[in-house]
Length: 480
Image 1: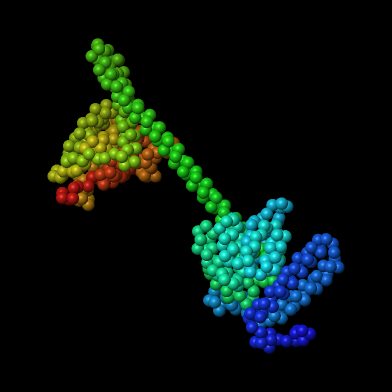
Image 2: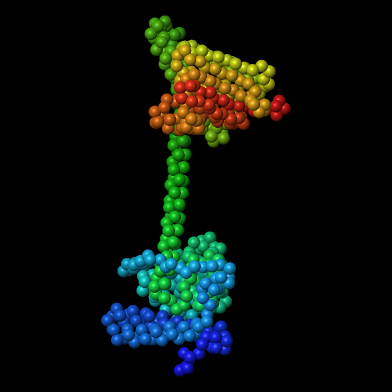
């Protein structure tokens, strides 16, 4: 061995097989690794003389390893040959500090060489990690399925089940694929490292293990793992909170439905009783006016209760449409008759317009009439005295449906509110913003009733220039 340093790599390497070089590197790596650990321990204990001798051993080991590796391909050359360029890594500057008695993470070292495992595990334990060892791929997979590891350090060359197969199983298992894997490689295995990175490995560590490189790469991988774990935890919390919110909403809706349903019966009785008060005896004008106001208020409240119950039924799909043959003119006339008195009281002009020759429709008469009444009621309510409210029916532009419209000369609606006014809670936001909008759930009912017939509803409006609500009802196929 005295002349070994004079031998050049090109002269020596052809006479040595790759297997022999691998076998030669393994004990050299162990000599370097153990001497590094002993050097650190000697320095910590103040044994300067021992530390100096151990550094000489390290230096000799590195020189011998350099001779063995002389002529080995570099990382850049191997990656270029593999069709994937990998730039030199900028190691993380994150400082990993160990808290006494508290592990920084649970790591699994997988290597069939027990000495290599011992050197690496002792180095990792000095950095503050808890380490378990698996001497083959099968033991590694068994350990991964029973304990929550934070990182796997995986050797490529192992008998029976090599690092490629272990990595493939980890990255195809939904329960394990989030665990970062750092490949352990010798210089002659760099092409295999490139393949592992393509398969999903997070990083690699060359032998022998450089303490600074080991600390930086393990720390960086664990930081990414912790970030992923935090994301998963937050997502699970959001899912749990959303489920709890849904359960609470269901409970609230059930309670609301029960209360509202129970309110309808006594309210109906109250209205009926007040309407028959005049049979008991003559009422003076003031009493008649008060009774009329009470009946009107009760009927408005009953209408809101009915709207709320119907909206909930439509949203849940529990309400079925009662189809019948209808005519647009009859629907318009029926709706106008219900709001004529309200328009006269508000000193408004009510205009009705129905195109001639409109064919019959198939639909739920009650739902469509209530839709028109709700739209007319809103227009009358928010149109100043001496204004005009119009209702019309005509063929839609596509010729496959009849379009109904209700127009007014009222205060109008801001464009940003067009979509919200049809939502169940949209009018709440409009009122918070200081805008006067419709009461109750009338527009929500209109939207659901129209869409349940296969039509659509929309609004055109601008502030201080009035509004026009349009909705369509499709014609029966044979009548289009």
